[in-house]
Length: 64
Image (cartoon, rainbow, N blue to C red; front, side, top):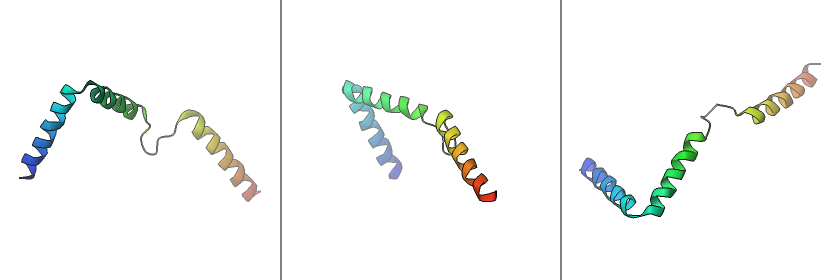
């Protein structure tokens, strides 16, 4: 029963996207931005460098 409901929802969603161009464009943009977001635990270039530099300063003053 759950499989039938899931397939029906998938089919209705696909039919809606086939008829509505704005919804297709919005969904494709969301997938594009999702692909460019970093994974959990992955650090970006400039932000990670500034964070590690500030944390080293803090730890250095603790142990000095």
